[in-house]
Length: 304
Ligand SMILES: [Zn+2]
Image (tube, rainbow, N blue to C red; front, side, top):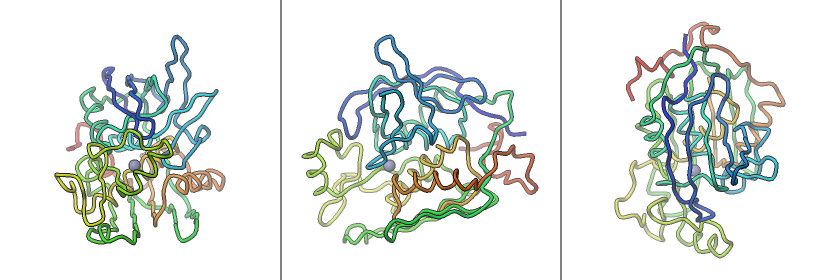
């Protein structure tokens, strides 16, 4: 049996929001089985819980956000991706501001925090979202699709008509029974054109963005001193984003995601369609024949 997971100890972190530029403090708490991921907004003595599920998704323009009772928490996707990638089912995260800190623009610092807190198995069977039929959404030529697959695979293709993007691979397909999320995906940073950054800042967005938390793309090359972490870092970041968005279904997924030029808004449309078309069942791993045991092994057998 695969068990549900939470963190062993409470752990805190702080950082600046990418869009707001505001400092936010986070405290991760262990949580009981079947809690899921819950953000708890701290406003003086008042605490408002916002479960990280589809029903609470708000704005998805530049990042994915949750909203409830007048509170909003945005840019949740990199943190959700870290929780999904480490298989943490249950965690309560206190936040004292409206945006999850951008950290280094990837999920790696959240993964480090989760690993530092320790991951423990709980006395309850882990549940999965088991995709039972294909569902697709389109916007212009962008596509987001999910289909049944015995494991977890994410395939993504970008198509940026820009000389710098064209120097690097714009397509990747990752099967997580063969490839480590932590090693190959969690370190991929968010990115953007330097010229777009000025426009965003004029519109009071990306106020916290700089070359320490994003890849800046100039006219001719990457502007970050150390260059890229992987040659396909852009597309790997889109895979990281998709994994975070998919975790809003409430459990790790058994299925395949395919994205062509999709982003948070279209990913959200896909999630809504997956729910409305009932394209999955919630299962425990023992319920399926030929269970994809290579994807999320018991912690004792895992090598990060
Ligand atoms: Zn992202």
